[in-house]
Image 1 (cartoon, rainbow, N blue to C red):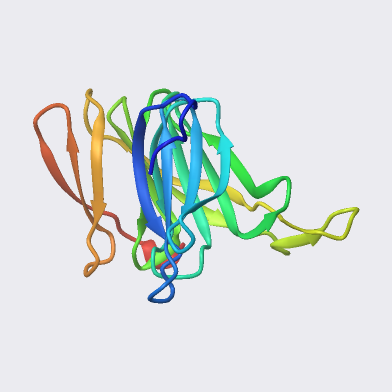
Image 2 (image 1 turned 90 degrees about the horizontal axis):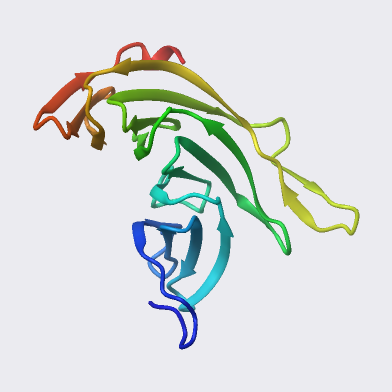
Length: 202
């Protein structure tokens, strides 16, 4: 999957599968160095949607891969992340989104909690982890002046944060079995195993 002849080729920094709710349906989301986010439909082998967040895209992840597209989080080079509501695509405006300035440095990675897809963790270039919760709006879609359905973005709140290192935390993953158990790797040559408690109370 590459640009057509004559289009400039950008560096692709991150990819993620999603929308795999049947054997046939699949999408790949790709984030690029210039801030482009592109959604490719593997069933039709076509570009389904694209946008630009004006900053290099370091990490993209759907809240769950194996369900009808629900939410997508994209993190950027300058400490901001964007949450897109992927349920309703407007013909011209695309997907509704909310953005948050999370870290004072690059957000290297985002990972959703397997047991609760509305909770996710971001890892930063200053050695910190931030735990977030996404709140849905009262209505996830509305009609515009021409009667077309458009999405409504929710809100994001910070649950907790911790600084673990003076170096960037470049890699992060949750345990699929033990709720709250996670592991991260940093540029200080250290792998840390962490436990996040009280997740059943948020």
